[in-house]
Length: 437
Image (cartoon, rainbow, N blue to C red; front, side, top):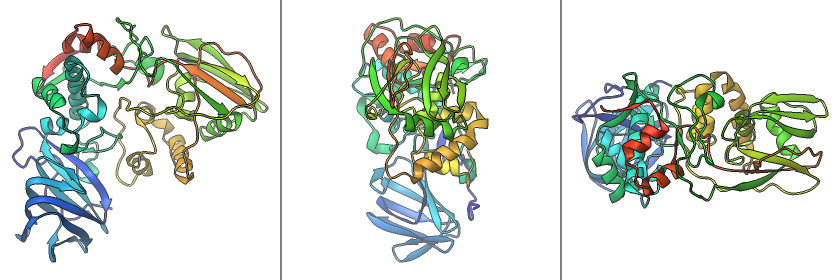
């Protein structure tokens, strides 16, 4: 539904030098406002408050301490919070039908203070944290207005970047943000695409081998420094039923799984082509397509081996944050709602961006996941592909994530070896430049 009475357009500055509007609570009917200050509407009504104060949605307005304020409601004050998450800047409450959306309006640099800790370990070397700050700032600016139809720029979940306001601030990540203030990555004068991931497994991937298309600065690069991480080696098992169900969801069903065969790999060992033979035929797909179908939280990367056995049970690995992309989904799209609910992770969202034709497939996958009481277990990886007709397939592999752009564990190792954040960024995004916006 259209936003009601919203004279302030997305991107309204409210006096901030580099403003950003973040949707921190979308489509809610009530909540608790904390801090102290003033809430006012465009018709001149205002309420002084000292929280916590419960607010709820009324007809075209907000019920606030026994008063009625028409949407949009602007909230200014100190130590502001909504549902116990603290926010810098101001809040704007927008009406949409029988619910409301809370938008945090603040300066970009303050926004970054609330996301870096969600993406990176603040105890890691400062040069790594600076590199992460530049990557995240570039991403935010490149994607301003992604949720324009909802009245804000970016959401606060992994569909954009995880944002937890003042709750996620840390003195070390604050330092990284401040020391790189305004710095972004550019290519050809435009903001660069800056995906990142947890662990490359020894060599990053070219974007062309993962999503197709060509970005000359997103190429495969070996890690210059050896390192180990919790994701250096992993193993997971999936039943034939689980794989069959995943293939059915992407219209690649071949019946009972008889064989899984790797056909080709890139220079870093990631599978670029594989074939699955079933009782009703066979299908060829890329390693990335297979990983997305089975679940990228299950098969951690495409650098894997797989073997079939006669018994076993699925055992998914633990999840970690992964680098993101920029899919444009509009309000009213159920894919957007599923992304905001956490049904899709960053790899899957980036896959939607690079391959819009897959959205219908992801819609079916999301609907199935939403209907399940628990998430279906995923698959693992390994190096070669021995044939097997068993009920369970074991995957053993290296690394975590799509592999494109900056490897966080690799960047950490480079920082520990004395590399500056500029050197780290130029290595993982060769040909880009560091500028200021």
